[in-house]
Image 1 (cartoon, protein in one colour):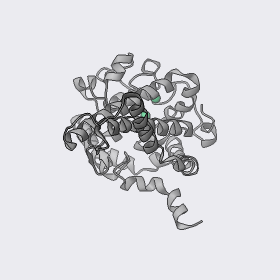
Image 2 (cartoon, protein in one colour):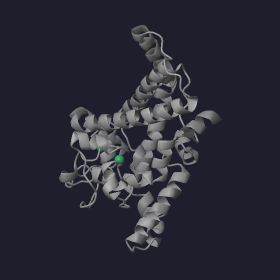
Image 3 (cartoon, helix red, strand yellow):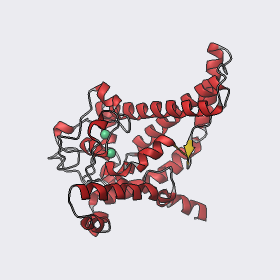
Image 4 (cartoon, helix red, strand yellow):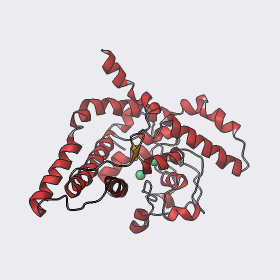
Length: 301
Ligand SMILES: [Zn+2]
Ligand SMILES: [Zn+2]
């Protein structure tokens, strides 16, 4: 095995140094600070949480071990199956532009500043991507065959920031196709309308919206720290709302499917405020015991 393939196999460890990943060390620190603030507001001590983060009880928990196995297993599959298709997004954007030219004639119809184009592009891409994430998630919950694969994410009985990567590889492939599709279509539309002058507002290589989301405690979504946003939840999904999404209680099933924008859940009737709710257990059902092994999850649940 050469150095490069070894490097690729341990790639998930490098997520900690990559601002494009949710478990980037900077975002973890931001979430930890928020967690400390939440605990101090609830007059709870912080020390037990710190001890828990470094305890065997956490790192050797069967649910956590499966999270870890899936991260490395999916990374390997990604390298073998999906990496060769990386160019598709640009190809799709150019095809979209060609189609628009064929259907509506030459584009480049608006003469506005490059900064304005960047601003509009960043906002449109954020809204389109957030809706696509919501809608595909909605389908995972409503179509039994898709649920079988998505249930892998929901079978976690312990939520940690790593649970984000606990997905079946079919879901990983569908999600990658969703991102490529949205970025390709929106990119193509903007190349058409503004003659290629697109450059999304980015800091550290990620969009400003993702940066705000990640600094606002995105990692607490997969944790047991209960952070609600009060009235703001009508517009922005809170970490507590995602914990409700993982609840093992039937009244919480299929609720709060959104990532950042709460409007989609409100339109589809799946929105639930965190204010009067309490989550006592995570998983796919109170009486459903799922063996936390990789073999048990490979074909879906
Ligand atoms: Zn779900
Ligand atoms: Zn989740």
